[in-house]
Length: 171
Image 1 (tube, rainbow, N blue to C red):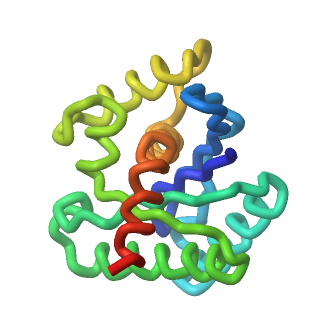
Image 2: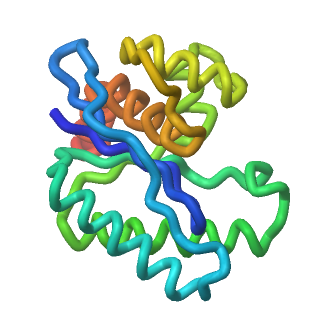
């Protein structure tokens, strides 16, 4: 199963594509969808949506996981939180338009799934991503590493999430 993890941002959205085969995970691709900082927000959102559409088209993920916003992560700045929400909306619009299954996880859930500690720092998360996927060579950038961590979280939570969804429907 191919899982696409996204770490949303209005300037840089990290992505990580992971293949899950039973308990084994393999990194297919990771990177960022960049947007020029100086561009108007509407242009950045259009570029972000187009970049994600192209990525989804060529990578054909079975499911997509996004990290949910965390207010303190954007330094308590309400404007930054609003812009992040708009970037997430652009991403969700692309994913929904293609009928993809979307899962969302909090930063603490992602950190816990990858490191065992919901308060782990970025460096610890990046190090565990590299260990879990047996990656050698150049380190992943911070945005890409975060997105891969989201994909790993989804891979680990997939079965439990599906059981919860079935249980919720039976009520």
